[in-house]
Length: 431
Image 1 (cartoon, rainbow, N blue to C red):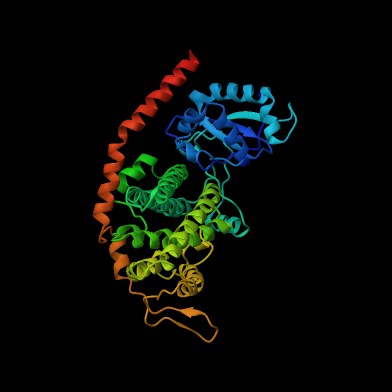
Image 2: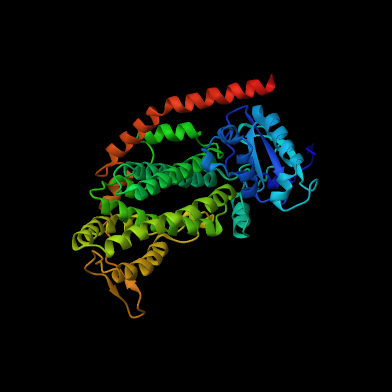
């Protein structure tokens, strides 16, 4: 039932292939099977903690593949037998909507091509011009490709900042778990914290595939203040209303930019992992809108509290999209981003300015107006505060970095225990 076979190597791409030198991951490759069903079934058959840990992620962030899942080679035999038992039981094909014996499952082993082992199909281009033509023709770049160094560097830089921001976003949400009003709000922030941290770990693994830094090196740089994260996480939250602004307006800005990347991103693993992230960020934004509506329909004190928070956060939200995109921007040229910063900011303004007005709130921009085409136009943006955040010198930068470093250090024993448990289980299976 489980047989090795030839597989189209170009299809073997993963949003989560994170290997150290000499390591291998094994792939269970499923032809035409919906991964979400596979994940649910896998979790139902007592392998949850083992294979999600082997994938290097939390149980809530285990859907790392489109048509396959990867596990550490030391675990492969165990999982192969597990899924053989599942398929043989008859429950697995039934849940997948197919007949017993008609579940094609094949396996192969891969080694990370970053360290010189080239048993994975590698595409090469004679020049950067040839690579540009490939991108212009809607080509998708995969980790095993011999991509131009500048492309690798730019994609990595963009994804590392995204991963850092998701991690800081999760820590920002975590702060409010104990402070949110009522059990319902606390549970919502707990779930959202788990989502954001899961997004960060997925993105760190995707970024690590590029071979620029390991996941641990990225975290070390973040906690040492050597790398960047989005400007909005450099500011203090003064009241509960500040957190609602973040939950609605900041999450909406993040969703706007992420949708633009997902739309036509040329780097395959990033594009695939964004499908999950974007779907969950949409729920986060709706959660923020629901809290905003509660304040909008509340007392004068509540409405004043939100207006004060909006006054504090409007400029940082405008900064979130970045300064005007420069001519020749490599992320635009290579289809990592599909729209310029100013286009995304304008799209956001056209949607959320009238929405906030309809809720009875005022945009803190005295020059805001509608032009002859009835489009909203904002005033000139002062970029001084953004420059401070880019050098990790914002009003709350040091405290945020220190808290994130402390959180990582305080949970080191959990990671160590999981590693020891995984190794013990792998040894027991071999024995």
